[in-house]
Structures are given as C-alpha cells and as structure tokens.
Amino acid sequence: MSQTTQFLAHVDLEEEQGQPAEVTQGVRRMTPSEAFVETMAAYGVRDIFGIMGSAFMDAMDIFAPAGIRLVPVVHEQGAAHMADGYSRVSGRHGVVVGQNGPGVTNCVTAIAAAYWAHSPVVMITPETGTMGVGLGGFQEANQLPMFEEFTKYQAHVNNPKRMAELTGRAFDRALSEMGPTQLNIPRDYFYGEIETEIPQPMDLDRGPGGSRSLEEAADLLATARFPVVVSGGGVVMADGVAECVALAERLGAPVVNSYLHNDSFPASHPQWCGPLGYQGSKAAMKLISQADVVLVVGSRLGPFGTLPQHGLDYWPKDAAIIQIDADRTMLGLVKKISVGICGDARDAAVALTDRLAGRVLACDATREERAAAMRAEQQAWESELDEWTHELDDYSLDVIAEADAEEGSWLHPRQVLRELEKALPARVMVSTDIGNINSVANSYLRFDEPRSFLAPMSFGNCGYALPTIIGAKAAAPERPAVAYAGDGAWGMSMGEVMTAVRHDIPVTAVVFHNRQWGAEKKNQVDFYDRRFVAEELVSESFAGIARAMGAEGIVVDQLDQVGPALQQAIDMQMLQGKTCVIEIMCTRELGDPFRKDALSKPVRLLEKYRDYV
Image (tube, rainbow, N blue to C red):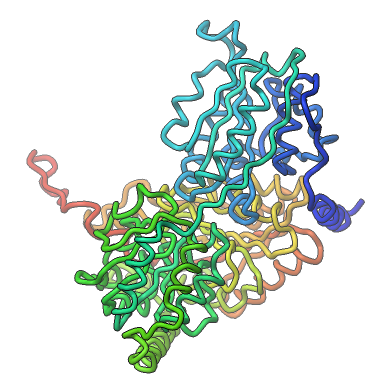
C-alpha cells in the first residue's frame, strides 16, 4: 500500500470512528486490563501516544480490538506534546503512556506545557510492581510527586478492583478541571480477575456564573463609552467564539486576543484588532489603552500577556475590569478587577448579551466613532508590518551588513513571516516553538477558526512545535498542519519527523535556520556588550536530515520562494500524505527580547572581572 493510500485509509478510519466503540454494560467479570481498556473506550479514546513497554503490555495487547491506536513515538516528551496538540484541536482527551521510570520521567516537561495550556491530557504512568516498591529495582521511581505541580488530579490505583473507577475519574477530572491528570497503575495490577462496572463519562454544565455578578457586569457595560473585549483561550475551550462575536457586536467594541490565543476571535471580523502581549499588535495595544471598561472573556490575564511592548505601556490604568473565568482562583489574580464572573466563557457571553438586549448603552452613541478608530489603527498596523522588512536596532543592522558580505543568501525573518502568512491555507493549524523568530511570528499569525493556534504558553519550552502539530494532525487529518521552529528548538524534537513518516501523519515544518539561540542571545546583546557565550549553532542542512528520515525537504534562500515552497509542501501533505521540512535561511537579526526587565546590568567587584560589564 502506498503512503498516500495509507494516509487516506487512516482518514476513512477516523471518520468511521466518529462514535465511541461499544463497551461493556453492567457489572461484569473481567481482568483489570480489560476494565482499564473498556473504560478508555467508554470515554471515546481512539489514539494514545507513547512507546510500548512491558509495564502495560497486557492492556496494550487489547487496544486494537477496543478501537484504540497506539502511536509509537521517538521520545516520550514528543508523545505528551502530541497528546496536548490532539486535545487542543479536538476538544477531547489527549492520552499519553510511558514505560515505568524513564519513560514516565521523559514526559514531565510536556505535561507542564499542557498544564499551562489547560489541555485535558491524561498521563498514564504504569509503576513498579507492588512487591518491588522501595527495593531500588529496575526502572523504579516515585512517579506521583514529579507530576504533582502540573496536574489537576492524580489517581493511584491502590487496588485492582478500583481500576475502572479511577480510570474514569482521571478522564472526568481532566475535562471538568481543564488540565492534565495522572493515572498511576502498579504494573502487577493489570492482572487477575475482578467484578466491576465500566463508568460512563460525566457531562458537566458549568453555567454562566452567578446572577448578581452578571447583573453587575451588564450594568457596568451599559455605562461604558469605550469598552474593549479581550477574547481568551477559555472562549476556544468553551467553543464560544460565535457567542463572543455576538456580544462584541452588541457593544461595537474592539476585540483583542489574549497572548498566544490568536484563534479566539475571527481575524476577518472588522472588530478584530489582533493579539496583546509579546510581539503582539500595536492596534490592539493602542485601542485597549483607551478603554474605560475592559471585558475579559476566558482569560487569566497572565503577566506575560499584558507587559509593555513595542515601547507601549498599554494596559489601561483607570479602566474597570470585568473578568470571566471558569476557574475562580484566576479571578483578580493578576489584575485588579471590578467584577468577577466564575462561569463558562460561552454561557457567560450569552447571558451578558441577553442582559444587554433592548437596553440603551452609553457606547451606542460612539459606535461610528469607535469603528473609525478601529479601522485607522488596524490599517496603520498593517502598513507598518508591510514596511517593517527587517529589525532596526544597531546589532541587527550590523549582522545584516555582515550577511550581505557572507557567502549565500540570507532572508530577513520579518519578510519571511509576512510571506508565510500570505501563503497559509484556509483552516490551517499552526504550532510555534519558543524562540526569537517564533515570537515575532505573533504579529503575523491570524485565524478565522478556533482550535487553530498552538503554542507552549507560559511554560515556554523548546521542542514543542513539531510533536504538537503531529498530535493536532492526528486529531484533524482533514486540516492542513504547519509547525514553526527555530534551529535551536528544532534540534530538540526533529526526530519526531520519523514518527510522522512511520505512522502516516503528514505535517509541514518550517525551520528558521539563523544559526543561533536567538532569544537568549538578545540578552547578551542588550546586557553583556555582545559577549556571546554558547549561542552559536552550526548545523547540517535540516532539509537534508529530513530527507534522510524519509520526509521531503526544501531549502529556501530567496524571498520569492517562500510562499511557493509552503504551497508545495501543503500539497504534499494534503494530496500525497507526505511530511515536508522547509528550511529557510535567515539572517541573525533579532527582535525585541521577551521582557526588558528580566535582567540587570552586570556589576563586577573582583579585579579580574572588571572588564565584563
């Protein structure tokens, strides 16, 4: 069977698997392995990411007849990132499993990233057998403490008879609390015979929040003359974009995306003004700075997403803040608020829209004036992006001059990002890694469909983009899938190209080859007088490495090749089922740092270090 035929067959299989497999009903006699697998089937699990291992092999043996596919990966960190991407795109659970000990420890970083993305990932951690605990046996580890900080719930199977119960609870809590959970199972508890009943998924209704707080919010919005809406990740997770649009339209308000949630409001809508935060939209920042009331829908207002940027300290100091979040502990945590609503983002948006219907709002009188202000700021920002072909700081101008003298052709990252933006297809899913060029990409990524933008969020770990987009593609094989990565981050996860090729999950990766750890190097430029330590990266061709792993590879060193190369790679992905790596040769210029207050100017007291200031 050809690779294309295999991929299309998988797409057909996914469509056939639209309904959960039929599962056992009532109290039945079965093995703990059967109880574990039947419970996952009852919760609609169709894909698990991980590496096969003896610790859970008895259960793994019956995955296939239960309708569950195990996707073997190169490294378990990649598996957990894949589960993260799968859950964020599908809205269902992402599931990852690892062999006890090292297979489990390899997942910690990716589970931390999933925690900060509020992804309902279930981490299955088979454990050393009960008779060997504490003896220092092969691959023994205490596996609960290492995930304690990054999970919403931890279940430890303390008796085989509780296998179905605790498995179901781990899945329920992942969705109800919107975050990773851990299911820890001693490896000898998969065996034996038990009588048990397979639990059914809980479908919880969060509701819009308390009526008093909703009334207070509606009254406050009614007095606002320049309201601004912040649409956050909670809007995406609640499938509430349409409801947020309706509320924004009633207010005639500018809408800005919270940091790294560029898919939380359609970019084609005239009220969309772009993302806040690092390398975000100046239009968004200038407009929110004028707000007298800010309505925050589904966002915790993380500090990294409200810091000054582009020389603008834009957060409105005197505005009243209404914050909606499903997690009450997030209300007022970062920013002082006037009204807090603990509720589902979609339901709360509907409730507020209903309460504003038929009322005369103060902002009705300024609707046309505010619409004109939106258009002016949007057009000004788009024009600035068109003209902003390269970075303008002294260091970047120096390295641009050096690149002109170097052998080969090197492209300006901003021009590359603009060309990629133009060439991205409809319904595309994009994941970005951490790093300087990927952060600058925040200015250029805009979406009309939710569940389209995947980033490592506040945890900010490298090696995120490729495995996450593979998981996203497994969840939505009908959608184009593109990963952005710098050459440093790419080196951490590029082995997962083999996972995409081996298991017919075709994706497209764009690697910005600028030969440096750019994000941290910028700090050496700004604080350490360009004394560069360990920041240079000299690599072989990433396109060539991709071809050695069975994928396609394209090298781009001319600006007019960027868009056509992406279109060619997307065609390979969607029509031929092929993974392709596009290696783009970029200059060493650097955008602004993550934050300018992260370091202090160095002070040296010992004589031998006096010159290092």
